[in-house]
Image (cartoon, rainbow, N blue to C red):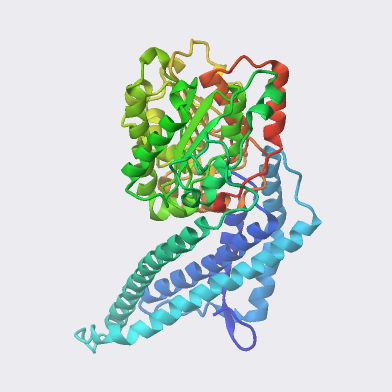
Length: 560
C-alpha cells in the first residue's frame, strides 16, 4: 500500500508507475486541459504501480521461492526517487502536449497549467490507489472462501497449494470485479435513464412555446408542447425567422418548417414516426423545395449551426423533421443503449421516405439526410448498402461518424487504392466524398454525380477513429501515408494506451477551435451548400451566414 510513516513503497510498482506516467504524456489526437492531463497522469501512475506490484508477486510465485529480493523500500526514499523521475520526464511530456496544441491552433501551456496539472495528478493518484485498495479488500475477503475449495491439494506440497490458492483467489477476485461492474452498469443505466428522463421535462425558459403553426409544439401542432422535451424546445423554439433570413441573404424568404417529435409523445417509435409524417402534412412540407431528415444525438439534440445554416442557404424554403429516441447524452447512449439510435432513426426515415415517395416526383422537395455523431450512426443504419443511400435520398451530410458505424466502415474498406484513410476516395468520387476541411469535396478531378453524399471527418476526431481494435491493433490512420495533417507527427501507437487516450480526449478535449475535433458546425454549412446547392445567395450573404454561425456557443460533448 502507498503510504507514509512506517509503511513502505513497492520499488517495482513505483518504477512501473513512472513508466505509465511517461505513456500518459505521449501525444494523442487532441489537447487536454491541464487539470485533465494531471488526472490522467495520476491515474496512470496508480495503474502502473498496481501492475508492477502484481507482476513482481507473480514472478516470486512462479519462482517457487527462489527469488527472495524484497522489492519494498522506505516510503520517503521511493517517493523522492519517483518525484525526481517525474520531473525528469515532464519537459518531454510538455513538448508533446504543446505539439498537439499547435496542431489545432492553441497556445502553449503556461505557468498556471503546471499547478493545475499537479493538483490533478495528486487527485488521480489518490483515486487510483483508493480503487486498488478496494480490489485488494475484495481479494482478501474472497481468499478464505477460495481456500476451502483447494484443500484437496496435497498438504505436503505447500508450494503447489499456495500457487493454486493464489491463482484461484485471483480468478475469484476478477470474477467478482466483473460481476460488480456488470451490476453497476445495469444500475447506472437505469439511474441515468431515470435522471435524464426527468431532466428532459425541465425546459429552458429562454425558449418559449412557438406561436407559428409551422413548428411542432405550437397551439396548432399535433405534438403537444409538454411532449417536445428539453432538447426539442431548443429546436422548435429557436432558429432564424423569415425576416432574419431575408435580412442576412437579401432574398425573399419563407418561414422554415421544423417538425420535432419527443419521446414523451405516446406510442411506439413507429407510431411516433407516423406522427412526424402527419406533422409534415399539416405544415405543408410537401410544398417546400428542401426536406431535411435529421438524426439526433443521444439527448435528441441537433447542432444549431448546421440546421440554421441549411435554412439560411435556402432562404427558409425548407422543412426539417427529426425525432427523439432517448434522453441520455451520446456517450452514455452509445455504451448502454446504442440500439435506440438505430431503431428510432430508421423508423423515422422509413416513415418519411414512404410518405415522400408517394408525392408527385416532379413536385416534391429534395430529400436530404443529416446526422452528427450518434445522429450519423443512426442515420447510416437506416440504409443497408451504399446503393440504398444513393437511391433513396437526393443527398446526405454525415458528420463525425462513430468508428463502429457499419456502412461507413464498409465504404472506407472499398476505397480506391492509394487514397488515405483520413480522406478516402471511392470510385473516383463519383457520388460519395469525404471532407476534412473546406474545399475537400470539390478537390477531386472527376465530376461529382447526383446524388451527393458527403462524410465529414476531422483527422483528430476521437469519435471517428477510436474503436476497440485500437487496443490491440496498430490503426491504419496512424501509419505512414495514412496520417492526417491534423494529427501530431509525434503521436505513435501504444497498445492499450492509444485507445485509453482517445477515450480521455473524447471526454475532456472540448477547448478546441471550430473545424477541429468533434466540432463540425462551420464545415457542415459548407457541405450542405455543396450537396444541396442554395437559393442563389451572394458571396457577401454567404460570408454573413458564416459570421453568424461562428458566434454560436460551443457545445459540451457530455451534454448532447
